[in-house]
Image 1: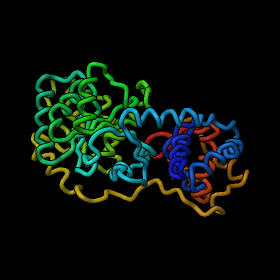
Image 2 (image 1 turned 90 degrees about the vertical axis):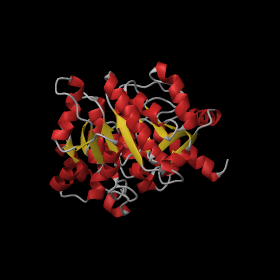
Image 3 (image 1 turned 45 degrees about the horizontal axis):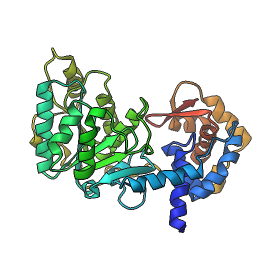
Image 4 (image 1 turned 60 degrees about the vertical axis):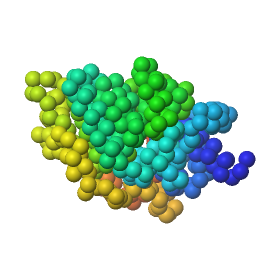
Length: 363
């Protein structure tokens, strides 16, 4: 096996191992240089964090996954390598690896997400389909999540011009089942993206993870119809946190499915009534990086070697209430690299949970 082939297996093994999320993955790579070195360091880090070493992914399982991806006609995109989407790379929790199938050239286009209610009204479905068709005709890739309702309409409208589907399951699993044909169309005529390994059925926690990819790929997100506290509003929040444009289609105050959109508009989202409105909204963001990548946790070794006393300080500051990492750094008065290393040790040991917005808590 070539060095690059072994590195691919090592990276996947690290990604698929327990207690290793995107932020932890990047910290390990920045600290130890290679996935192989990171895998070797995990047992010691877990001991320092006061727990047992997490179960590392089995190498034979990883090799089987790679073989399955090849049989499916898909491929991996690793962050920092090749065609990995530049906009997605800018978010704090960018997936270390994506599994993709279809037209990779669509990743080079400006992209807009179109999402909304699964039980959408007939009028909203028609609007979403026509909006997506018009955006695709303008050379914009339309991103959505292949769910029922608005997502389905967005993909159907943009299928001929260019659409990207992001799913919460493995790339070989269709959910909902009735969209199996549409998902195959997206994979052959557009681009299909998955973060989960093949064969993985979607779980409830996978959908917010999928939503961050939808928001991260896009210059802006259009919400066509959404009830309060819906998954579409999670996507809107993630888009806003990433510095992207949040857009919403207004609806009747008598329809509960419009309340989420109307609330977004009241809070400052751009009101959308046409393709021209969307193009105008994303124009200032198009063609440039929005901010510097946030995954740079590199530090000099001396700065990142905390003492047992430092560890006690950080552990005393943590509780079940999520708190910003920056606040922990401020209150501890420790070097940021030392704090990040302690948090890394605790997470690998299973004693730390990470939350949206750069917050952490006791697990």
